[in-house]
Image 1 (cartoon, rainbow, N blue to C red):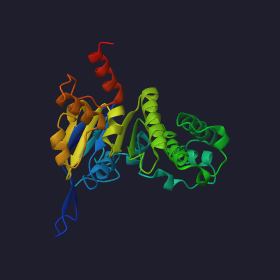
Image 2: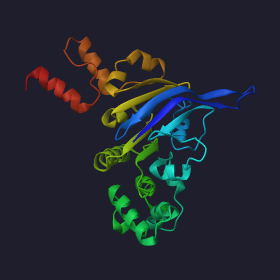
Image 3: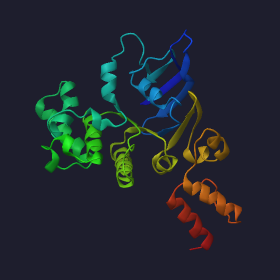
Image 4: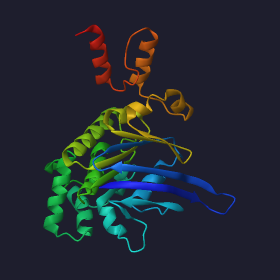
Amino acid sequence: MSIRAEHLTHLYSPGTAFESYALKDISFEIADGSFVAVIGHTGSGKSTLIQHLNGLYRPTSGTVYYNGEDIFAEGYDLKALRTKIGLVFQYPEYQLFEEDVITDVMFGPKNMGLSDDEARARAKKALMQVGIGESLYKRSPFDLSGGQKRRVAIAGVLAMDPEVLILDEPTAGLDPRGREETLAMLEELHSERKITVILVSHSMDDVAECADMLMVLKDAELKFFDRPKEVFRHVEELESYGLAVPEITYLAHDLIKAGLDIDPTVSTVSEAKAELLKLLKW
């Protein structure tokens, strides 16, 4: 299973004085089971891109293939696709609406035509996977903390048993602890469920910890699509896009300037620790 985009272009207000590119001739392939991060400044095209991947937006030209099939071909079942490619919007807690947590998470599976018992079983499994216990099932989702609301909203998508999970800035607005817990949850879901995860973020430090591949967008164009370590080699170019490499990478560069023999692509605390221990020969 894979997602492949070919020459994907999306124009806003085509043929008018306000014509502008949201996406410009973007091509890539995301392998099954990948953890891909999408990085870029506001207006770079991140949110527009991910909404093409399950057919919410239709491109001006180019197309998207899922498992080899053109999702924009006449007769393609987009409704079925959206159960396979689950999209969690930014601030998903704003989409909570049912009277209690379990009923909210059951909504998606019931909308797929599952029975109450099947939907409830799916909802319980999804809530367990995001760390929401039974004691909260009958609570109003509006009475939960911000982090809990976000977990319930993500569970609502997981309950549809997607093959691909796309999340638009899932840590936005969370405190540091909530951010760390959310990222750890996503890494665990990716590892345990073996699903493809596509994570839109603005934090290089976050994606350095979890992503296998990193996609960098600028002004509607795809600038990089490579392993994070390879992308982080291009410090000056990234900075020219208004982006920064992880803080640990900057520290590694400073240590190199001071004469230490350290890998310049170090991007996480654990990698930096290993490099320093190697220098100390411990």
